[in-house]
Image: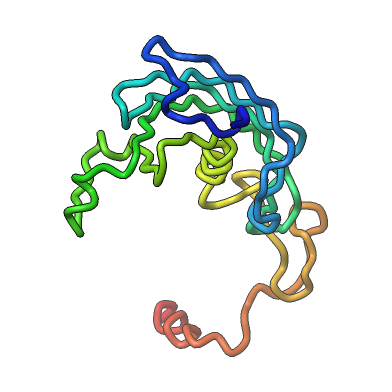
Length: 175
């Protein structure tokens, strides 16, 4: 078994340290891509036969596209990780709907008693992508009329939209 996939039986209660530097993580390029390596340094400790504590730090640089101007920009990810990896426990199999507590949110359910560090890294990278990807907070975006990048080349297009269904409401507001 490679260092990427670690069986629960290989992990001691005292804990073991793992360090990885990867450059070939599968990502959806339209969401993000990697610039350079992803580094993971973690300690795995056995809590029980079906529960492992993972604590560590992940560092990477993501390349994202701005939602407003479509320009590529980089975002540094430096996050600490702390969660429990457990096999599919009976309490989740018997109940169809489960109300999760805050404690449960730090639990990763696994199908088998093997921790795949590559998959953990991939999931954490996706979780680090911001909901609104902006190159800067004050990004002006692109002009809807001529397509100019308003950050670099402000255009002189009219900002009034023709055929705007809310123009009638704007006229009422002015009265």
